Amino acid sequence: MLPPLLEKLMDRKTIESLFSHIRNIRCLVIGDLMMDEYLWGKAERISPEAPVQVVDVIREELRLGGAGNVVNNLAALGARVAVCSVVGEDENGWTLLKALSRQDVDSGAVFRDPARKTSRKTRVVAANQQIVRIDRESRDPLSIDSEQQICDWLVANAAGFNVILLSDYSKGVLTPRVIETAIAVAHSGGIPVLVDPKGTDYARYRGATILTPNRKEAEAASGVAIIDQQSLERAAAVIMDTAGLESLLITRSEEGMSLFSRAAGTMHIPTVAREVFDVSGAGDTVLASLAAGLAAGLGMPESARLANIAAGIAVAKLGTSTVSPDEIIAAVALTHNDSESKIKNLDVLTAIIEAERSRGKRIVFTNGCFDLLHAGHVKYLQKARALGDLLVLGLNSDASVRRLKGEKRPLIGEEERAHILAALDCIDYVVIFEEDTPLELITALKPLILAKGGDYTPDTVVGKDVVEAYGGRVELVSFVDGKSTTNIIERVLERYA
Image (cartoon, rainbow, N blue to C red; front, side, top):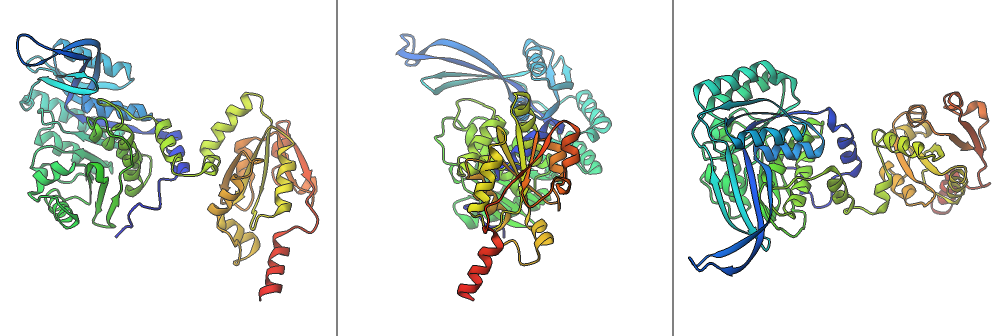
């Protein structure tokens, strides 16, 4: 069984790297599209015609709803999105297509059916409370011709996507044949299929990678009332057996989420403490962020953590809302101290340094193991920082240190060393590298100044040729005499051995 996520939270570096590459992800959303209309106003009197509130409308807003909210969430995260669905030949259908176009979403597989009504849900909101909802929609299954159009398109095009999402709102688009075809073509291409399910017959989703029902939906589908840990696990077992699932994610409102896996057991993810304004569309946020994580190469547990963070942000907003990468990164940053913000993966750091260089900043780079940080290290780093406007420290990984200094080193692990160094004011960014030399970092970051200790000569500094080729230079910085990790180890052994 995987441990509960009470201590190990989502790593900021991983999240930043995910969002730096997310434009390379192609996502296909299949499901029921609709328009969400919001009428915002004030309710300060009772109608003389009936005992109901009178709402004075102040603002009107149209948003993509249903599967469109999943599309919105993926687009807000930065992914490339295509959508496959059927809408009517009506004004709402044209409005919906225009909204997709504004989001730069590929709507080439949104087919039109003159006999079908495009769904539109109107919500009247006053004083941050939803007063009433009015639905105008089709709930009938697709016509045979529309179903055939979707299936033919999926067979011809689905292989070009990194992940497929089925957003089922029980409005007729996801017929058994459409679901079966989508899952079959995904399997043939090794593409994960994520489903936000509806109804009680989860056998229709057999073969999907993961389903994401909420607690109420899981109770209805399993026939098990979820009142405690044991009943939750019984409900999950029924659903997984019924749908032939390897993984299942049940969202549990204020109790967080539970991820069930045949291979890895159960993982309970506590909720992110936030004030809840509106849970509308939170399931869409979960589906989209879970899919983004999996498509970007995160494991299922890490993707579920990402979904939990995103859902916590979404429910703090009123109405169906999206979540941005900056909001997720900021939420992750709140769980760490300030040093966390300085530790970057190379892909993220490269973009940051390029932007800083374009603003005229002089970039200084140095590297080392920095095992058992001491005053000599600090003085050296302060001198290196004084050479320019921004200091980047390349830190040898644990494996790299062992190769360079022997199996007994390092004494302090790479993550702990990185946090200690990042806490120093003289260091702007820390990046951990696995290689024996920092040549790859230097080539990618292109620092103006390459700083090394005074025990080197210019010709022995790795990366000297690279830096000088584009006009940079090497600077040798003197160490404080008598200060070294080896000396500290020897004194400890002398006193305590």
